[in-house]
Amino acid sequence: MIKLREVIGYPSLQYHLDNGLSLHEHVYRYNSEAFIQLFAEAREAVRNGDIELNEVDQELLETTDIGEYAEYNGMRVPLDLPMVSPNYNPLFEIGCLIDEMIENDELIDEATSIDEMIDFDQIKELVESIGGTINMNKLRKAVSLQNETFDYNGFEMLKASVDYIPEAEYRGKKVALNKPKRGGSKKFYVYVKSKKGNVKKVSFGDTGLSVKLKQRGARASFAARHKCAQKKDKTKAGYWSCNIGRYWKSLGGGSNFSGY
Image 1: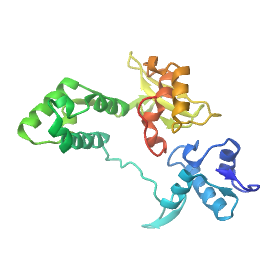
Image 2 (image 1 turned 45 degrees about the vertical axis):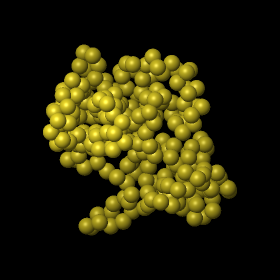
Image 3 (image 1 turned 90 degrees about the vertical axis):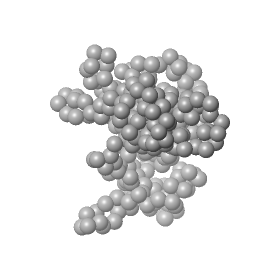
Image 4 (image 1 turned 135 degrees about the vertical axis):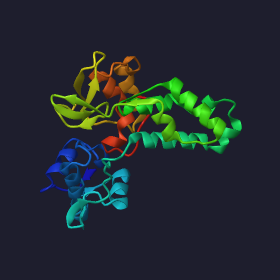
């Protein structure tokens, strides 16, 4: 964002302007009132000619209605803000990815083994990112059996091989494991389980710095400085700072980023 003239009456927007943050680098929790207010202020500021947006932020406002509200069945609801259904099972989405891999004609024609059809490392990483543990031998067996019967169903394969624990208890309340969120004492926080089975809250991310995931050079420099390849302990802030890109979409970003 670029400030064209003095901005008055836009408290959420002002913070981002003062700190050189764009809309897609917002500091607010996705789906929060502050998040919606930021976009509402940005829309008003653009209409008043107070700011100029970069290409990515301009597209966000032009192609979505984030920041706007409407009436639905007597309720005031935010527009263009996907919310997770209480009945939603994140394994279904990963299962669909398995289906896409198996149904990829190019892969099928060129593959000489199941491992060339399905990226098992990616599946394992995705399951762990939502707080689950997966028995890879069971998954491979499930894939082999369905490959023989041609009765493909990625979701069913996962259910047969995943020990999925979506919630744990932290200080008397139910919390989701391994799912970073914005806020807390730092920019982000996440609940994890230690090797002893205790649930721990890990806060990470400097509130005064922006996350530069779209800048390859900046990402590579950060990874090198912080030795991200050596960060394997999920109970440490360093692990999550290095791997935040894998969860970026769920935090309100445009897409996830693999690697560091």
